[in-house]
Image (cartoon, rainbow, N blue to C red; front, side, top):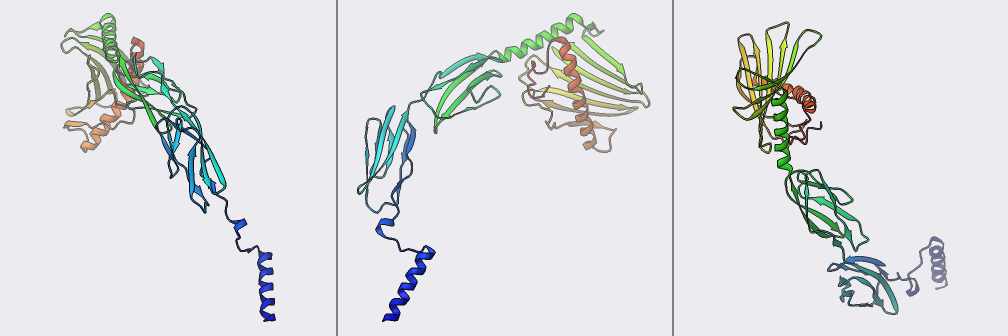
Length: 340
């Protein structure tokens, strides 16, 4: 018996040294509340939890008109103000300060012109506001709530605060008319400064030789018969009988697709391809689908399409520089994603 007592004493001593002490009532984990502060928007709910409680938790609110709490700790925001939520575990009281906010968007409807801005504001909150546009092609919104009109149409701008959404319907005016006006301004420039052809068209021509005496020609032409503006490019190789031609056909309704033609002539051989381009989505990285009409020049249609795409890539930036001299740009005409 004496030996057993000694063993027990030694074991207890070892446990004390190693830190293994049996839990006592005094050492039991203290109850803890999942949050000491909450910020809610009127109508929102959040459930508080108590961990380490050995007894039933009783919940109460210091101001039920501001925030209520259920028997399971679910806090519901009622109106703007502050309230203290108390969780009572035996003699222990745990509290959480609840602040109820009532955010408000300064406008629910806004009308502005393309290129103009309007700043939306959310008042009545200290929380972070996340802004978004349902259609950035119509209007964008910055992290500060600044709305910028891009093109004609209607779009919802949303301010998200603590999970709640507040929306403003933005109507952008004048974008379509702006594109039409740009077309008319370009047309007027060509008619005023261009030379008349035998067919009655008006044309502006820029030509130059490179170091190998190859000729590059770029044109802007207005064709009254079709009420179209043609942007043209011709490359003539001086060493061989070879000519590359490309043209982009613009019309007054710049909301619709426009046509791009490509052709190459090598003596009696010819290649011809075309594609339709959407001004609103066309970018430097756009993959164009060319339709081959004739191909006597290239080994395969794939080569023909590659040549056509290369011609388009070369022509666009040069045409843009030429257009700038007229006071009209591709962007004015609705090509907003080219990056020029």
